[in-house]
Image (cartoon, rainbow, N blue to C red; front, side):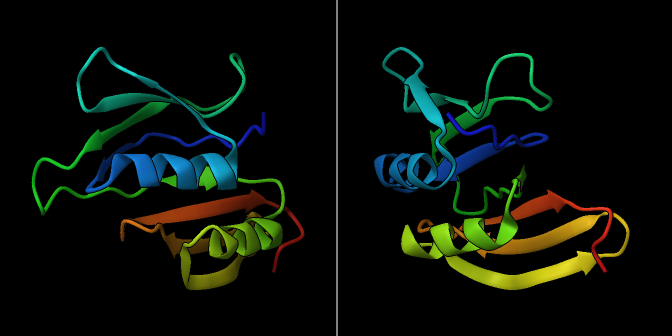
Length: 123
């Protein structure tokens, strides 16, 4: 399993199955449904690694927002994987000098997320 972790998230979705397939393909996340509820626990990485897990749910309100940043090892490869899996890069990779690389993408359900690669030589 890949170790792509987020700081915090809860993802609303019109089509949870499609969203789960997307995130599994791109980041290797695993999902476990909470009883019979339209809510799935999201396991984003190995226990004990920095970061947290979260949830994916059936959207409850059309204004229900989500923004999360996923730490990745290789931002260029991740952006290619995102597009291959049906996502769209909406803000191209940009350097945060001395810190790393950032980019933003839209998943197939039109939610905006960020990806982050630590790299002290960025710039």
